[in-house]
Length: 319
Image (cartoon, rainbow, N blue to C red; front, side):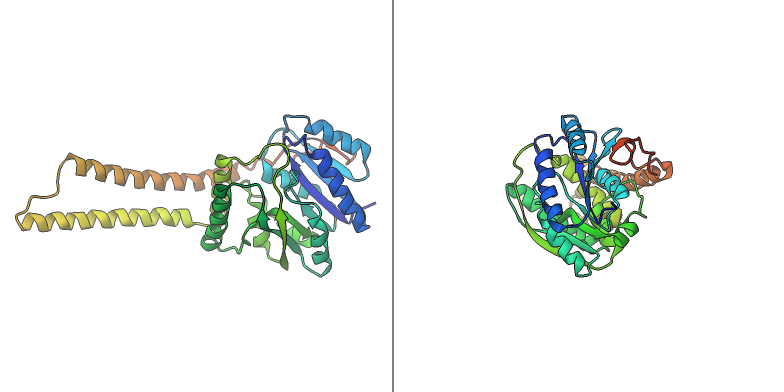
């Protein structure tokens, strides 16, 4: 039977939670009284998660589809693979760590029945997170809203439900560096927020340490804004202005008979400042050029080793 609802969940080293996650999703989706499927994407797990995912498929082949990547391709591409293979009229995306409660999907479905094309989850409360994580997340969402042309809702993640026509529009975008929440905002359609309480992780470890958070934030900014390029231009302009001001001050002091501001210290400071501005600008430009290089290579977004639940055969790469 063709499913009416699809639930997509990327999984990376979640052996402690994957069975509990399935049980809660099953209870929620069964309660809706419509055909459904759960697509679990193995993003190159290194623990027992793949075996547990295969066992879930064996126990419930009617509902559970398992996609095994050839290697780790990352969270955003795992979401993309699940969405590529989803067959439902409405498709939900949720992480498998149970910080986002599967029970919220029922409320998203209610908004979908009201005529909304996208229902995105808004984190009204966040348990178990440090003040630093809360502050940086809050700052990032507000920064990206100010510097991009896309109205990305504040305090949202990838937890959302999309109507088939909105999903088909999303799947037309095949860029390599993906920022799913921004891309879904970009497509438009009728969207509404659903507020919920995000729970603390009960098992396993976070998959987003600080360096990955920073990389993800930079990908989001550069995918939807040219602000970093403008920032380097402004920094160069400021450096030129500072140099002209300093030259004017030195000229006035020389004409007035005072000792000019000179010496190795001043020279070294100016050289370091101007060199830093130049390297910073070149680095930002290199990030954008690197993205153009990735797109020009036109490699597949991901490679699939095996799919269980769709005739149990390896799938061709999606370009």
